[in-house]
Image: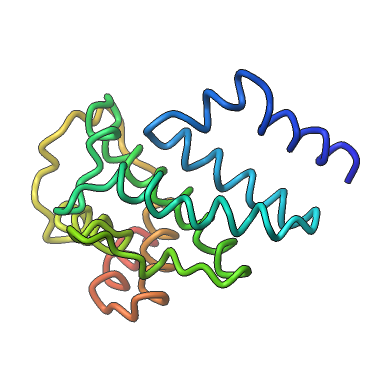
Length: 171
């Protein structure tokens, strides 16, 4: 606990930690997921709640477009993989946020930005009848990450479509 407390303090106060938290892509989502999980372990529910509430505007609304695309990830050379990774971090954050009664799973901005919308966008390009991915992707994305992402999404959103995608990547 002592080491994690010191690490959490470093994440929150160091120049490098602050810079990671201020980015606009998956780095910031991963940062928030890590900070909230450590804060939860250490019993700092107020910090978990603060970051979880802020994630609505700072992460979901700034990282996901109304159509569900993730423009900060789409610029990358492994765009599909990074879109999935960003959502995996946001899922981790959403799971921790649930513990302090913040629902990121169903949060939707006024113009429709949401985790579910991002999943629906990616779903167009995944599974057995997928469209061709129109962005740069220099290597195959992790099948296990896609399966895990859509398996969890199928449960949260009670979606047969997401369940089919998960099954496709579990083979």
